[in-house]
Each structure stands twice: as structure tokens, then as C-alpha cells.
Image 1 (cartoon, rainbow, N blue to C red):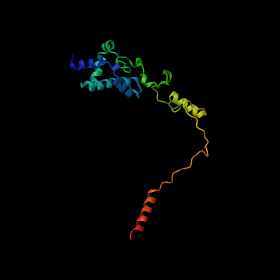
Image 2: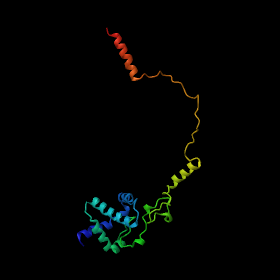
Image 3: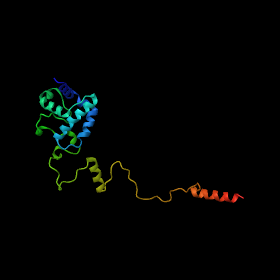
Image 4: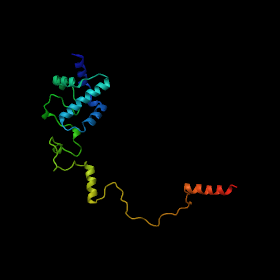
Length: 185
């Protein structure tokens, strides 16, 4: 086994699912992907980058991709890929969409499709909680957890000031200049 193949095998055997730093970075990277193929490509690039940074070992992405294609059956039996990175040997139709692309309010029936949205499609839906708050505001119903404040101003309950008004800086200097000019002979 060549030295580069050994490195690629180590990359495949690394516990990607349990590395919290990697999973956090991967979810940030995959947050805006539009296709499973792109998600797979980005996940593999992230693996190479992260492994080379963590272990100070250069990992050539293109060569690693070729290695994975050649050893896909071995990789499938030995290694669990990252949560969002299915192996390369699967056909594109069998690759599931990464879960980070579906938000809490979406289901698989209204997941983003490969077709670009037409002008007739409504704007992106708000998160459920935000949409609910917007609905409450537009219908004039009270929002739970928000204190109701009366629209009236309570007159006559204020107090009068007990301290004299402070002089402005220019008022202080004017009186000191006047007294200084009158005291000099």
C-alpha cells in the first residue's frame, strides 16, 4: 500500500461522526448547499481539509476522491461516513438529501426541488414560531408572553423636582468672568 493510500485509509477510518469540531464546521458548510452531489463533494473536501490541518498531513482532494471511488466497497464495509456524506459509489438517485437542508417547518413534500422557483411561487416560508407571531399580530390577537401596556398617559401622578436646575457650562463661565472683571482694579 502506497504512503498516500495509507493516508487516505486513515482519513476514511477517522471517527468523523464523533468529532464535534468537524461536525460543527460541516453543518455550517452544508447549510447552503443545493444538491446532494454538491453536499457530498463539500463533505469530502471538508474531510481532507480538516484531516490535513489536524494531523499536519497533506491530503490531495482529487487523489482522495479517486481512492474512494476505487475502494468504495471496502470503505462501505469498514467506515461510517459523516452524517451528510454518502459514499461516492452510490448513484445520484439513491443519495438522500442532507438533513441540514430541511428546516424544522419543512417536510420532504415541500423540500426545495431542483427546478428554480417561478415568479408564481410564494416567498420562502417563515419559521413556524415566527409565522405564528406574524399571524397573531396581523389578526390583532394578543401574543403570549408579551405584557399588555395601556395606551393612556397617567396625568397628575408625577412629582415636582426638589433640586434647583443645574447651570449650563456657559452660564457658569459667564458669571465667573463677570465677577473676575469686577474685582480687578
